[in-house]
Structure formats: structure tokens, C-alpha cells
Image 1 (cartoon, one colour):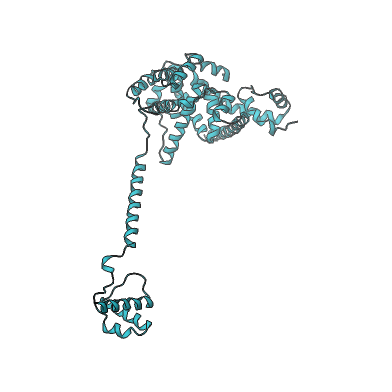
Image 2 (cartoon, chains in turn red, blue):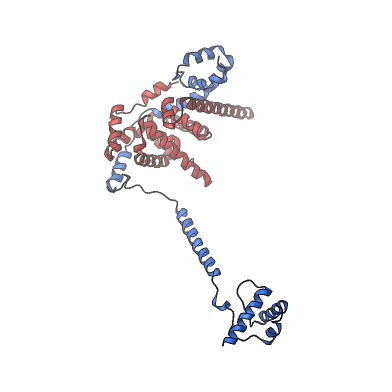
Length: 209
Length: 187
């Protein structure tokens, strides 16, 4: 299993953190081109996160565009306490769950794993069956995340998917490190219970067979 | 000495990567090594975290994706209004359409209510007491007492030859006829 540190190494952008800082400062001064370059550098990773959250290609693209506009609108609020990618991921997550809430209020379903999504997943996964497995796994994981309270979900998402440190999350959320740890603990506790329940259901299914 | 409950926040940290960002790290590790209950909890939390760490790792692997956002954003910003105070000229708030309709409906309701309230307070022209006509004989006969005046007035109301705005009472009817008489005398 890959550790979080290894994941973080993979997460490194094609441009260095110093370059990111320079681009952020230029963008905050109103340079739209710098902002575009900034997003261009994180687009691939952001696309995967969007695909993971949204469930299909079209919604992922919409989500990314909305996230980009919102990030541009509120760029002045970014104070560099967390990484730029984490900040953007946080916006994207909130946008997604806002949208999800609206959909749920209207009583519609949104998960649609169709051909578009299969095509959208990069070739890294390998064969089509591996890709399908990955999608299935992603759906299960996302369903678990959806069941968490918003604050706990935010900590889990930013820690495991955006690869942010606990201090970074605390700085972004404007709370203490202890609060973040506590939220992480409760979230993991819930996830463990969900996992137990799922295993029990699988065993039950096998028993019936 | 801290109890198991006091170390549970550290449990989450150890379950994810074992690196605690504060100085309690060594103490926590020592506690978890000797406490069977905490070890069991740690095992469960690690199992739950492992799925997300693995999925996070899969999502983090970079790949060659079509670069669409940069050009899309450049296209958007090309048409932006440089005078815009927010710096995002193309940004327009997305009010749901029904919100506008609701606001218009509420405004209309308010206007209608105000008009209705205003007109109900005004004395309508057709409800002005008809003082041109002299009091009838029944009224003149009834001018002696309040009760009789009231009865006469009720009769005229039923007949349709008399109308009076405002609250109706025996005393009110009496003064109404007194005014009518004074007007007749003046003319």
C-alpha cells in the first residue's frame, strides 16, 4: 500500500511551489493569463478529483469550470496557508456537495456510470476490466464519503485525496489541530463501521448463494 | 497519565501515516504499544483509512489529459469588462428563475393589499348619508326617544331609503337624524 508521503510526491505539480506562488501573486493582482497557467498546471489532477466526485465526464467538466470561476472570483481570499491545489480541491468539494444537495432536494438521481465515464478514465488503469474495477471501487468509496457529516468529510477528502497535511487543513478550516484530529478520528470510526457493515452484507450474500 | 479516550485523536493520526504533528507522538506510541484496546481500535481505523489512501493514490497519479481549462478560461476572460469592480466581468449571479417570479408575485400581492386597505378606509361616495331628503314621518315620530329612533332607522334601512356609513347604534342613528333635521331647517 502506498503511504501518504508517496502519494504527496506523486501529487507534485509540473511546476514548482515557488512558481505556483509567483503565479498566484500575479493572478491576485488581476492577471488572468497567470491564473489560466496555474489551473493548466493542476488540471490533470483536478480532473481526476472532479471525476471521482461527480461520477461522469460531463459533470466533472462542469464542476471543474465552476470551480475555476469560483477560485478566480475569490482568489483574493487565498492566503497561502494551504497549498493552492488543496484550496481549489476544497472549493470543488463544496461546489459538488452544494450541487448534490440541490439534486437530492429535487429527488433526482445523479450517478450515471456510462460509456462517457469509461472513456474519460485515463489509460493508467490498464485493461477495460481494471478500469471498470477502479470505477466501481471509486463509486463505493464515494458513497461512504457521502454518508459522512460535512465537516468530517471535508477532513477526509482533503487529507486523503487532496493530500493536505493536518495543519494545512486546520489553517484552511480556521480551527485548531486538535479539532481536525478529532474530526478525522470520528470520520474513520464511521467509515470503519460502514466497512464492517459492507463486509457483513457481502458475507450474507455469499451465505445465501 | 492519559486514558485511552484522551489518546483517541492521536489514534486517527497513527491510523493514517503514523506521523503526529505534535510532541505527544512518542507518548502516544508508547500507550498504543501497551494498550490492547487501543491496538484493536487502531487496526480498525487503519483498515478504514487504507481504502481512502489507496484511492487517493490512484487519483493522484498524473496522466496526459487534454488541457481544456486554460483555453476555456482565456476565452472567457477575453470578453470580460475591464471596468468591472470584482475583476470578473463575465461573472453573473445565477439566480434560480423561480426566485424572480416569487419576488414579482410578492410585490404584486403587497401592492394589491395596500390598495385594498386604502380604499376600504375611504368613505365611498354612494355611502354618504342622504341628507337631501327630509326626515320621514316615521322618523319624526321616533325622534322622541333613542330606542324609537333606532327602530325607525332600521325600518328605513330595510326599505332602502336610508344609508349610513360607520358603526350603527341607537345613539348614532339619533344624532344622524338630528343633523338631518338641522340641515332641513337651514334650507
